[in-house]
Length: 153
Image 1 (cartoon, rainbow, N blue to C red):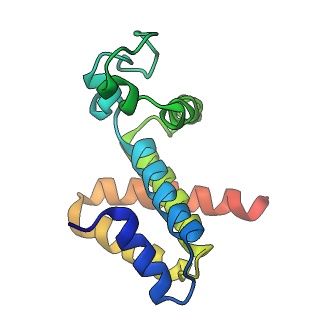
Image 2: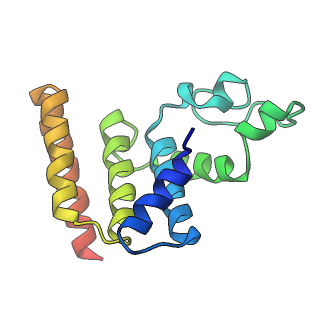
């Protein structure tokens, strides 16, 4: 069975960008975006009773290997970042998280040669095809706000 890392590595090599480092970069960008967009209740650490529904740690010591594997230093970093993002107006909603995760993913993909405009078009097509008109409009507005903030940098 092929793992995500192997598939990601093959994708990078097919584009002439080979190297384990770039494959790992793509893998971590994917994992990062996934956890930022995921509701707290769907985190494995929540299901194991390590964090609560707001991401606060409620179980300080982890005894089993399952607990240790599902709340690592990487998860701790993501948890703290996600909690900070949720303090930004609009980012606590599922749409805000989806847009934030998308832009993190897009940035990582663009560093490896992806076309940002094509990614935007594909993302908006997916949103328009799978969500209601009201939800599509909300995501479109959040994307425009993010793009404007990027231009200000």
